[in-house]
Image (cartoon, rainbow, N blue to C red; front, side, top):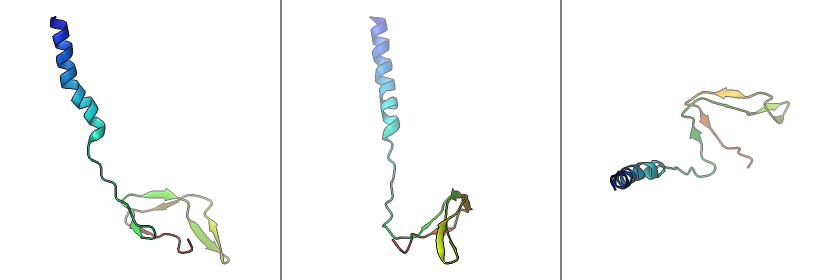
Length: 76
């Protein structure tokens, strides 16, 4: 009987912690399409560059430092 009480007590104490781990409020901010955003962290990404009037994707990733503004493609 004592074992059942301990098991029940441990389930009652541990279950809310385990079940509550994924339930903390998280915020998601939706940015309207076409709006510029400012980078909060450094990012490595491919970028489009203009060569002889043609737009091409960079062959390597480029480091974009935190604080830079990123704009959407005006042609889309």
